[in-house]
Image (tube, rainbow, N blue to C red; front, side, top):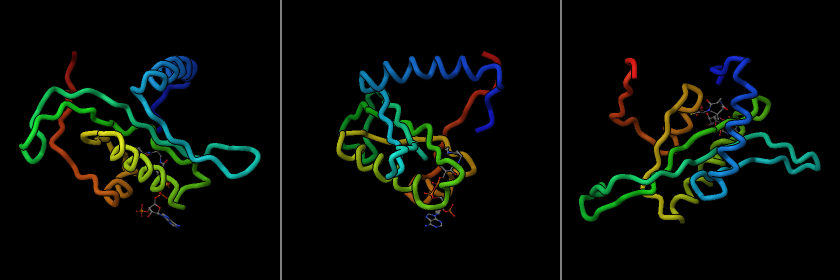
Length: 136
Ligand SMILES: CC(C)(COP(=O)(O)OP(=O)(O)OC[C@H]1O[C@@H](n2cnc3c(N)ncnc32)[C@H](O)[C@@H]1OP(=O)(O)O)[C@@H](O)C(=O)NCCC(=O)NCCS
């Protein structure tokens, strides 16, 4: 996403590797990759889902209490050479299919400009989320 300074690259790789080893292992993170049907097995795209518990709250129909898990979609990326062929669309549909089959209560994400048309098409809508930009 061009947000990472070069001098943080190695630190991020190490920290991410440690996070994913733990979080995939204990089910806090689920990832999907698109791999070429070719001996190289090159990975050309991916999508991820971070699962989190919610405070108990009524569901949308106000009929029962839900407490998650909620899925936060992250790391949706297609290598440039493979874009606009439906790869991210296929990964996202598989991710949503998995959510339906695994009791995920809701799915949220923060859309980039590149990703917004794809998420619109899949049925995501803007919410009322705000972010504090002051000092913490
Ligand atoms: C956003 C991103 C993941 C989309 O990946 P992608 O694999 O190109 O996505 P898809 O091909 O499934 O869909 C993208 C577009 O291609 C179109 N498309 C799908 N199949 C197509 C085909 N066979 N021929 C032409 N276009 C096609 C889709 O309709 C969509 O078009 P639209 O944007 O006009 O609606 C990719 O651009 C990316 O990695 N961007 C940088 C990282 C990023 O922003 N990630 C999202 C974070 S929220």
